[in-house]
Length: 187
Image (cartoon, rainbow, N blue to C red; front, side, top):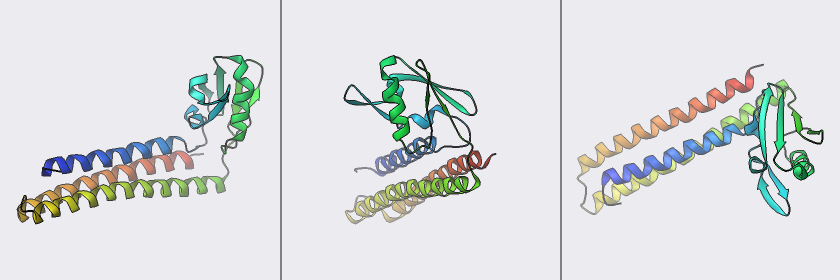
C-alpha cells in the first residue's frame, strides 16, 4: 500500500464487500411472505451435477403465501422437488406434473424471534468484516508513519477518515438488519 488514499480505498472496497454479503445473506432469511430469493441457495442434482435452482427453472411468487417453480425441463421436476424437501427451509413442495407449488407457512411467534436473533448475529458477523478492514488499514498507516513515508498529523487525519468510513458502513449494516427485522416481525 503505497499511498494513504490507496489504503483507504482498499479498506472501503472490503467494507463494501461485507455490506453486499450481508444483503445476500439477509435475502435468504425467510419472512412471512413468499419470496423466490428463498430458493436461491438450493442446488439440484441435475444429471449428476449440483446446479443452482435458478438455472433450471423460473420462480415466481403469485401471491404472498406461494412460490411457483416452472422448470425448463419437466424431467427435472422430481429432482427439484427432492432438493427443496432436503433443504432446511421447511417448505413442502407440491408437484402437479408441470409446476411445483411451495406454500409458505406463516411464521410462529417463536420462529420470528429466532429469525430476528439470526439476523442480528449475521449483521454482527458482517460488522466484524468492516472492523477487520479498518484494523488492516490502520496498521498500514502506522507502518507508513514508522517507515517515514507519512507524517504523524497526516496519519491522524487519515485515521479520522477511516473511522468515519467505518461508522458509515456499520450504520448501513444496522439499517439493513433493522429493515429485515421489521419484515420478519410484520404479521
